[in-house]
Length: 219
Picture: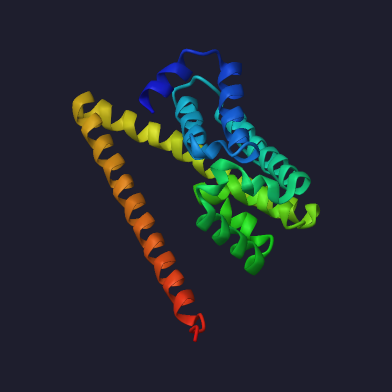
């Protein structure tokens, strides 16, 4: 991410807004989240705002707008192309998780759109799945907008205040120790992410095992 930040820092302000907005938009509209999660772009935008490269308020507006428009585009893709979207090669690789997302929509309805905004994999898929399920667009848009505002503001501010914290540490104890502290934070986040994935895998395994156990025996 450091290399990406340096690259963005070398761009002009309007181009930074365009790049960050495009990454957030593409995650939901084109399933780009499989390559680069949108929250990474939002955090980078907040970090650059702290460094004075761009305006924080305008960056928040760009991220929120891109999130809502990207979701709406993903919804239209799912509604118009239907199940064919799920039969593409990238989607077939994640069949189990897609089934879980569809189950979440069946159980929670539009609330799943809001909840899915905060889970990277679901964020990239939930809009299209809502379109496939023919969820009424006004209802989808309401929960999409709520999730987009909460997510966009939250992750952009996270990048902004993370940059502020780094600058304070660097100014107090020096660059080397600041980098070490940042590394510890990153490692901690990675450990938390891996543990979350393992817990999710265990739940899916228990769920699959329970389904197999309930199947009637063949004579």
